[in-house]
Image 1: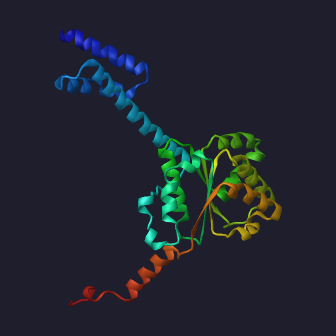
Image 2: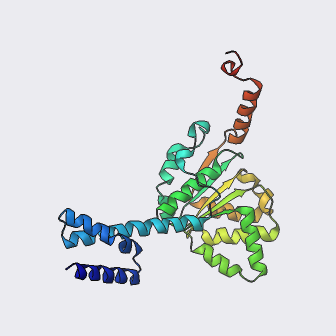
Image 3: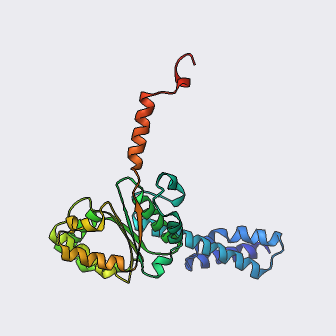
Length: 266
């Protein structure tokens, strides 16, 4: 009998490997032993085995989506200090984390001074979207424009646009730090225009809308970009002081005024 069981196990593992079910392949003996001990019938055993395969498949898929998104850092909403940025609408951010704006093809614009956590919130929203099964890509605006221009020179622009069109969420970080060339602005507009009502877009910027012309160069083009981005849009403002500046001041203050209990003799 033991030989028959061993042969069955070998054949089962062979079939599971051929069917590309790695978790079932690895866990079948362990789950079979547990089910036998708990007197679970064969359908219960199969159910547990399938559930484990599905859980692991979703975990691996989520990891692939996170890797494909190319986030510069892993940031979650739990790490964001709302008390340090009270101007940020915490209730709205929490609602957006549920991802309904992606289903509605809505956009988000995060406006504020450098260092106020705009990229942190955008990244947290993107990571949440990955966990919800969405295809996400993070781009700094200057890097995206460079890639678009290079793709144009290499006659790969349409291929790159098609890749962007497959996304559920496109994050455009740091719009406004470096003025774009005429061609760069036009290529960026093409991406935003193609995403309109098809792909959700998150934009982080240090500039109020009236100053976007300084980056995009043309009032006509700026108007067209804003028209598409703000049609179905949530706007979040972070007008507080820079985290980095606060931290630098705190460290400087500690160096100048060490606590009395740190002094020798105390």
